[in-house]
Image (cartoon, rainbow, N blue to C red; front, top):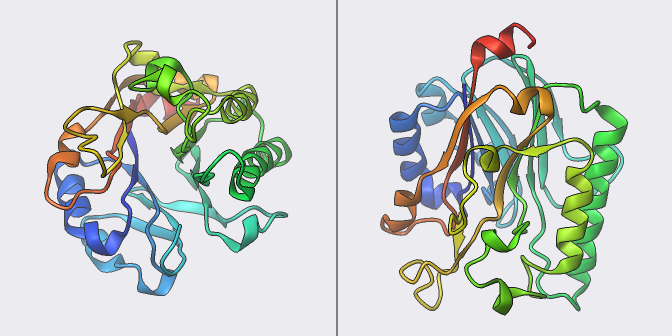
Length: 263
């Protein structure tokens, strides 16, 4: 079972690129962020034609998340049950087979002295509260999405230059570490320990050509589920296509038989 995450920075603009990638890679689940479209305008038909059930929590112009699944999905939740996230559509969750999938788009934060940075930290804290209230870390649960934070120095092209900047600020990393301590493993790192592997590059300053990237898109799983992972990766080729999103797909493959057996 392949689970992937991708911030597409407007599904309208990148629809064909996403459809082509789905047809090629055939993930069972694809979680999208920053779809920038309302639920009723989301292009459901072409995804259903590829065999995907579509679940959307959209917003005009900004934000928005979606889950595409080849399996029947239940218990769909849009947003936090008891926190409105300032009206921003940044979380969608669903039970897909025997896995609870939580897809998030963490706020960027703008600048460390901005109210948006305070909101970013608040959002991460609310996400931890949500998990504590509704789930146990013994479950088969996967948390995926654009976290907008690089956890470690090896996830940043120049950690010295980036220290204290958005995406690699110590307060962000501390908040993310507390979230992880709820009971997650970074599944990508289970299979790739080396540095220099990035999921996002700025459009400016020829950042992609110079490989000035950050690893800010993540797939975390609870221990029982992470132990069933067999591979992980990123598709860097997607960033070199015409008019690409600034992020690339990140994916993990799990042992479907083990999941079905409840291992």
